[in-house]
Image (cartoon, rainbow, N blue to C red):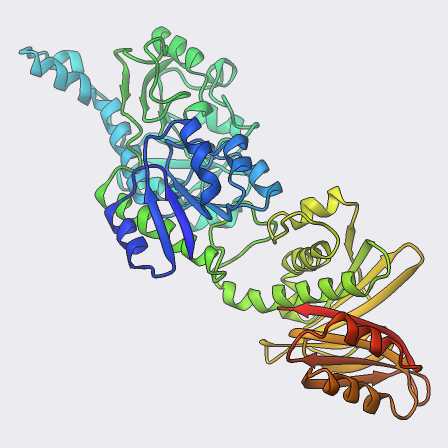
Length: 529
């Protein structure tokens, strides 16, 4: 039974999803202080938050059982993602759930800032009739510069074009082909500042983008530019923007987000007559609230159940839309890594990964994470998963490289791992038959087709008559049933290697008795779940 803490308000539809899950216990406790959160978080496997809860390093360290932090919304700047990654905690968001709502809020602020909507409303509500004081400007035939051309930026572009605007955009991660398809010109950031009549921000907050709207960049803008921010408040240097609004360099601004929320009374942009400000309403539509709640609950449940990791922001590889197709390769890689760590006489220092086939060549990063997870599970007491395995590998001095020419057999989706330790090395290769049935097909020079599943006795011996009979007799005497026996040998009369799948784990007495067989040179047990 998994336990989930919902520490911010969440849509009723999401809570209904939790109530329907028969493997979940959940608590809804919004508004807790940091101290209260720290006291109870050790009891939970998952944390669902919005923007109110700060999942900082202290909270993540206290959450010793935490598997996943789910952010109902797009921004994760209230989560210490680096600490979560190191601790193996998956961080996920819902990037598409509130995109339409945010795009529409952007257009609302753009129109309101252009036509003095809020100021005119206040004037009329006060009994005034000052039509000439609120003459605005049209969006038609103006140039809109969009910083960040992801989901929301593209939705804004479509809506702006419907108003007859020319749209340019800056996004270093988007190809010009995407822009051409949408009739949007991708430009450098300096050109965007200089050419735009309106500028709207839709980029994530990073050290590089923090305070990207500042005195220097404002100086590059057109006189009378209008600035819209429905992304993150810290993208803007509010003091510099306030100064430009007062001087008239920036004609108006529409701000839905602020550097600290709620904004303090001394925030320099608050109360300026040419600013329209709203209390972080970008995702505040009935439809968006429902969608983010349902999506984050479904995502968190899938992570806890091991079904899917979609929208995880700190996975070291891309998940894509079909995790079910990736999962068997991850599992096979993990089992190969665990085998390597179990069979190695010393801690593994380096791994070489080779792949063959279209399917696996596209999954090298995912396979590498699986290998590292399997290896580290045998070398460290730390909690290891696909999220933190690459970071922990660096910490423990386990290097991994991709190499060509490692593959040994002619399989269409082969994974080959060569492990190195002080004074030795071992090669293990595996494949997926039919894309779903894992097999170990090679260990060094031994060819075989063994199931890496359950309790496996890995036996190395001289290839002489009677060994199979002796092993079977000993296991039978102690009530250990053999499920399957796969054997490979380097040459007749040379050395043989067996993978023996057992129905139960033999005791230490059984293992010692097997090792006393004259022809046996090594006997190791490994559990491959």
